[in-house]
Image (cartoon, rainbow, N blue to C red; front, side, top):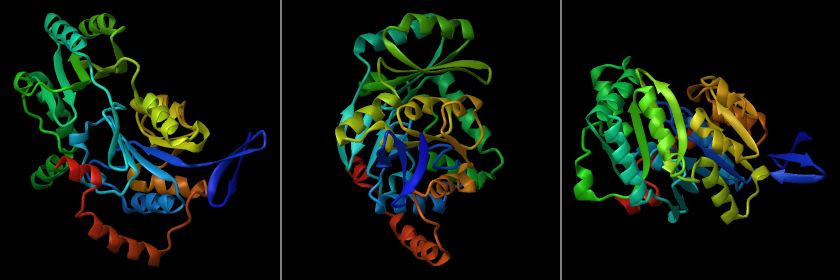
Length: 327
């Protein structure tokens, strides 16, 4: 098997067959977007150039739709997959959604109460947190932005679009459809809950996180990989014609479902095992440089960069078709 270039798009030669890159899946946090500085212009211009080559761009995130940042929603992408694969939007239209059944949610609530675990439940537009979960998430985000001054921190909280407030009681009145459960607690309790729910839910992440153990659950059989396969099947695109960018362990299923998988930055030795290559971090223009190296895009000259930056400034005041429908 060998790689070579054709018509500015990377293709793979295997048994005499040419595969052009037709779609790129991009994780948000730590991949496309920096927590402090947002999306680098180099990435925005690179993705625009990909679309000019008729390569489709799909935002793929574990966030729920309601917490996707405004600068991401303002991008003119072809689709968004949110909730770790539980929601698929394509050209402004909903293609797929998946929730936990009521019976499974009852099991989660019962087990969490029995083992004294903290819980956050995600719906399409809202995240329901109990007291301990709200404190944990807020503390974690505060740690990420601790080097910023108070004014900057207020701005970053607003841009992050997640309210770190105890609101678990709202579930009774809202009666939301839940697609993700996040559990925090002592290792023994978390592992016991994992055993109880193994047949009813998909284990997306299980890891030590600060002083707690963390367990992330989606509906059984659904993850980032299943969503890639579902959308590719709908569009008639093969695995070998797909490319992905991710930076953490919850991106592994997405990376395994695409023919070319790029690890952004150097944060996780585990994810590197699943990567075709590793590119520079977000703010060192990793996405742009990797696409350039693979000859999928051309070098952006200074004159074109200035022109496009002027256009981008104007476009950033607008929201995508999806966000317009939701607001």
